[in-house]
Image 1: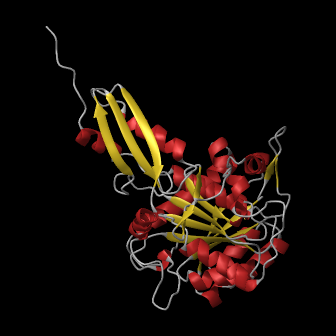
Image 2: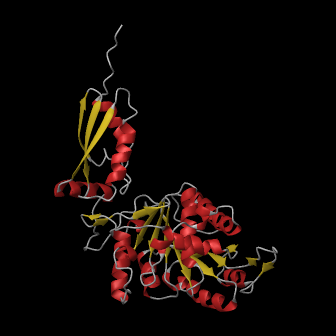
Image 3: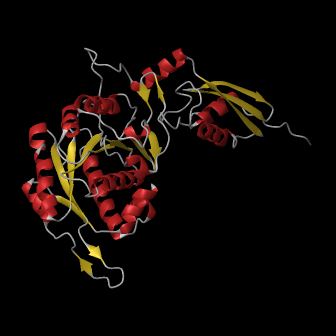
Length: 377
C-alpha cells in the first residue's frame, strides 16, 4: 500500500525561518523582511534571502543557518538558498525598524540610546591612571565572563590612540555599515567596536580633541548595539579628552579603576578615580592586577609589586576592592592570541578572580533592573 509523500508547507518553512536571526542585527530574518520568496517543489525548498548590503560578510552564516532551520522539516529533501540584496528603500525601512525611531534628536544632535530613560544597559568605563597595568586585558576577560553567564555584552574600544581590543578579542574584519548605521563585529559572544577596524593597523592615530570626541560619539550613536545588558568602555590611561567626553555623553555610567599594588600606580590611579567627582560618573569598584606571583616550581607566593595599593585606593575613593588578580603568563598569552584567559583557562586562579568580579557585576545588574540607581556593591 503506497502512501502520499508529505510536502512541506510555506507556513511551516516561514515558522522555521522565524528562528533564524540576522547575525549582525540580532533580529529574525522574517521580522526584518529579508525573506523575499519561498517556493516548494515536492521535497525541494528554494528560499530567496535578501542581504542588507551586497557582499555581506555574514552571508555564509545566514545560508548555513537557514539551511539548518528548514532541513529538519518533514518532507524536506533539499534546501536551496538564493541570496540577493535589498534596495535602498528596503534598507531604509530596516534601519528605521532597528533604530526604533529617529537617529537624530531635536536640533540634529545624534541620539545616544544608552541615555534613554527606558534603556537598561549598564555602561561601565574601565579606567587606569597609567598604562601597562592590564586594563584592556581585564576589560576583555570581564566581557567574556559576563557573556558566558548569559548577559548580552558589548565592548567599546575608546582607547583611540592605543587600541588593542580587536587583537585581544580575536575580532577581525570591517564592520558593515548601511543607512548611517554600523554593525559591530562579534567575538566570543561579545559585540565589539574599535577604531582599529577602520584604520591601517600600521599607521598611528594622530588626532586631537574634536576628532576624538566625534569618533566616540559615532561609536555610541551610530553603532547598532542592540539590547545590551552591559557595555564596557576601555578608556585610554589617564584623565584626558576621551575620559572627559565619555563622561559628558554618558553621565549615568560607572567606572572601574584598575591599578597594581605599588604606590606609584595607586597614586596615579587615584587621580583617574577622582575625576568622577567632576564628571558625574561613579566609581563602582577597584580591581588590583598583578597582585601576586606564585612560583610554579615551589608554589611560593611573591608580591613583586608590593601590596596594599588596591585596598588603599578603594578606601580613598570610598568604594570596594572587587578583586586582586595574580600574575599569570596565560593572561598575556591569551590577549596576544585573541582568546581571553577566562575562555582558555577558566579554572586558573586569575580567571576565577575575574569571573567572580563579573558575577558581582551581574548580580548588581539584576538587582537594579528598571531602577535609576547607582551601581554599588
